Image 1 (cartoon, rainbow, N blue to C red):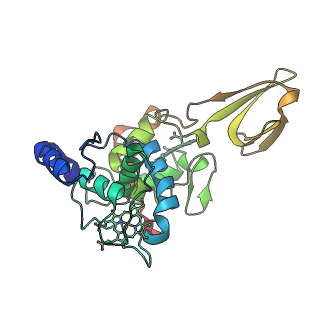
Image 2 (cartoon, rainbow, N blue to C red):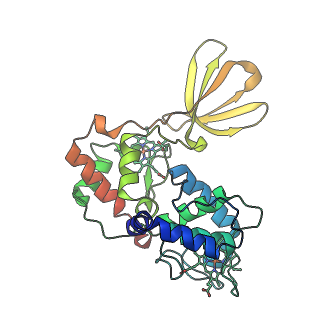
Length: 267
Ligand code: HEC
Ligand code: HEC
């Protein structure tokens, strides 16, 4: 992935030219760098992928009867722009039809981000020690109190079993040290103030017009009728603490090495 973006930097002129020559609709403003690469974009891309692509390429991108695996690099594209074009236009004279006609360019870029996330297996030399990281995860880091890994751990954060297949080391570092950046709605908190003034806070599990169900820090579920509480508000920050407050630089490196080693194949 890193190589691909380097290429895109080194040869923007060539890319743009080939775009103009190859794109059937040359008037569409197109970029050679993917503008949509945040964790949230990857998730949106994954959702689109599962709706439109998974039936041929497998829901996890591992390949299916009708389409090749997409987690082992790409034969037909060596840049993000090339990948974008395939997602957008399909591959002529093959079963590969690409994203639906009325999808936006933004959606196509998000799918590109998701496809890249499937290929984050590059051999990177990480400074950390993965087995130290494993100890920190359950021990000093207290990560398993919120995160499920191979069937054990808490449910107050995302499952991390194959996190190394979905995130590269830089993204992992950002998750650990800047948890409030880009918190997906699924992980927002709801703060309920009851009639007697007492406050209950937790992750939003269910909500409809009249009622609200949240899970507090002990993983206890609470149900409220909206009409019978003083107020309820959403808190869009993450409940995850900044790991750099409690861990040393070396310990962070160790955790990142550990998380990055957790690949899909290991399950
Ligand atoms: C009807 C089945 C089908 C659907 C739906 C489909 N594909 Fe494909 N896709 C294929 C086939 C078959 C190929 C191989 C084409 C060839 O090169 O012969 C392919 C090739 C590709 C490639 C190139 C792989 C490489 O190694 O270069 C990418 C990337 C890709 N598809 C992504 C997607 C995405 C993203 C979607 C959803 C927006 C999607 N496909 C939907 C069947 C499908
Ligand atoms: C109090 C609960 C809590 C603790 C403790 C916690 N996390 Fe999290 N973590 C979350 C929540 C909630 C999210 C999702 C929201 C966000 O992105 O911050 C998250 C997100 C993450 C992500 C991003 C996952 C993804 O799909 O991109 C990683 C990686 C992660 N945590 C690792 C850790 C590690 C390693 C530790 C221990 C040092 C830790 N977490 C401690 C709650 C927690």
